[in-house]
Figure (tube, rainbow, N blue to C red):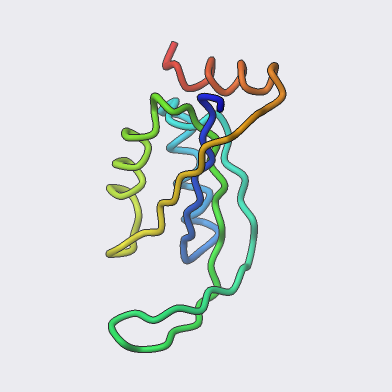
Amino acid sequence: MTALRLVFSTIDSEDRAKTLARQLVQENLAACVTIVSSVTSIYKWRQVLEESTEWLLVIKTSEARLPELMARVKELHPYEVPEIIAFPIESAYAAYLDWVLQETSGA
C-alpha cells in the first residue's frame, strides 16, 4: 500500500471542473487533476430518477492531505451532496509517487 490516493468527483460543467482542479492544485491539495469530459450519470435524487451530463475529476493526492482535500472539495462544490470518493493505491511507479508526495507537501 502506498501513501497515494485517487479521489473521484463529478461536477456539472467543464468550466467548474477546471476551476475546482486549478484551486486544488494551487493549494497543494492535489498534485494533478485529470478531467474526463462529458460522462453520463444516472442516479436517484430525492426519489426521482435523474440523468445528467457531468465531468469526472480524477484527483491525485497524498493520504496525508486527503482530509483537507475532501473538506475543500465540499466547500467549493456547487452540489448539495458532492461525490467525493477516495481509493487507496496498492502500488505506483516510485518516481510518480515521490512527485505526488512532493507536490502535496505544501513546500
